[in-house]
Image (cartoon, rainbow, N blue to C red):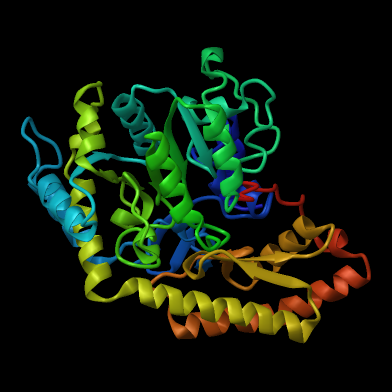
Length: 435
């Protein structure tokens, strides 16, 4: 246990949950050993509180930094925004410039609104959709944040989010009056969505990630679009995670199916706080019929960072690079697993590549993998989010370590010594994310 773990012990005493984000809790990676905190981050490297340098081959700042940490062009724009005054009585012109750029990228859209986080902007989208339709119920698929509108799915039976977020999640604090407003369906199950709308004519919106762990079945996205049109529901594509990774803009552009609202955060500003909803005027204008307003949504840093990020993504064809690197990582895992005799499968879109282990004690095995990779100077787990900053040499070193560790995992599995080799508890499971 190092300085970071000592600080985390204190944090859990004064910060409920220890961190602000479930995905960054040390227990999600390597309990009692994960560094927990950083002093600085640059490119694909992170330094902990004791000055140790790690190559980050894990979740990549929760996939928020496709250009790498502290990208010089984005940071120049941010520093310029700070020096020019990040807040004033007047509005920053960058928000108009960013809206123009987003609308150029999304030719189907007419208007833009902003927030500063994914959860916020999804709540904004839900409010706009309900205001535009005058309806309450939302059919949804997948994970869409922490706000009441979404967690209301677990009011009643209490298990509707088991395959979308976390199993057994208690919707404590969510008003009981929202029960019955959220109706889940599984990805690629158009029949389930059709059944929902058949029994509920008052659907305000259909909310989903267009792509995540599974590709859309033939005709699925087109079918969802058709259902939304038939019942007069607002189709909302949550691109908070998928956006800006497979192309410049949303992944829906690749599939040629346009929503009524598209939602962005995370990578839109390379890790700086920024979020946007892009949509059709017929829906977006309803934002004026309700009250959506926040002081910090008018600060300058977010739009300035987003403009610099998007322009660099375009100029350097970054999504194509992320796809290429992601495919190389997936092939590397499969080859190393084949050589070692490890039962492994890969999934997700290439820029969000993950592997899964087909064993009953998979969590313990991944914990051991994380432990051994940390010993070798890597922040690593069963997900590797590549960035523009990752070099071929770093990835080669990563796979040299993987080639050492995979056979060791197989030996530990065969001799039933996985748990024995762990120096701490087994990692916690993350989002179920079956959709």
